[in-house]
Image 1 (cartoon, rainbow, N blue to C red):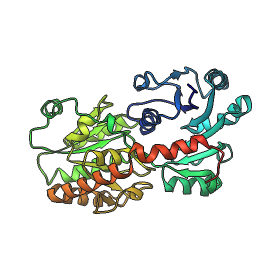
Image 2 (tube, rainbow, N blue to C red; image 1 turned 120 degrees about the horizontal axis):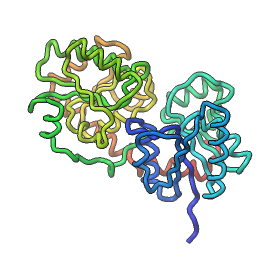
Image 3 (spheres, rainbow, N blue to C red; image 1 turned 180 degrees about the vertical axis):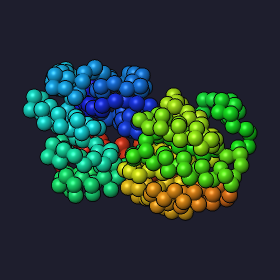
Image 4 (cartoon, one colour; image 1 turned 90 degrees about the vertical axis):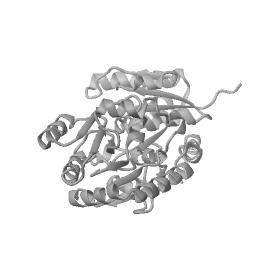
Length: 360
């Protein structure tokens, strides 16, 4: 039987709370016309890629010697496994793509998952670029002067096979010290202030709990600002539960009544798609790709980014109106299962893998 063409995914770290990691895993699980391989430099979610031909390179990418080790290890890997296409998921590997092409002739694709601003003349040199949202494509064109024809927008998607409740609700409530009947608000992602705006969410929630009883906020994930945020919560003495990086986050997504993203920057967050698959009401800032996905008051609620008072008002409105919560959750569910599933997204990616040098 003829071998399938092989795609090598390159990412700095494979982490449980990382949306990029989840996206790579979903591609590998659902793209059956290609063989997929992964190389990363570390992370806490490596076990999730067992059986996916995953290799970890323990080298310092910030040193010349480490970069050379990474470069030549990947070149050997490309030749050994007859890789035809590289899909980089980080600018570090996009930069190395020129060397991969020189040594092996492999075609190169870079998926752009976030906004960055530095290294203008060293970025996005791959044969083809994938932008996860329209706002990211516009950013690449305006800031890095990339050719629009070189960039294809392919949104993130959900994998129904991932979804499952492992722990009974009663057990989770006991674990989190939340009484039965308590209203649960959820945030799932990096504990990050600069981009994810978790501080804004905490401040707005702090105002809500002064007026609403038996309400709780769970923060799922970890990140660079976890210590600062924990101290903030401790000072405010408000009912917020830090979950850390859970193995099965779906237990806590389904526990939540409302899911909230207060992002300052967010290209096309997986959390809002995952909220939809769980049929949960969603509140998000109007940052970047969020309003590309959410129709305000149809399948979610938007608020002006960094506006704590507006977020507070939207939270109070949704907390008090269970019918609106049900309507928004149902509509978001329908949007997700009709548009953001593998059957819709994987053919777009596989077309790019087959013809990485074609202009669209």
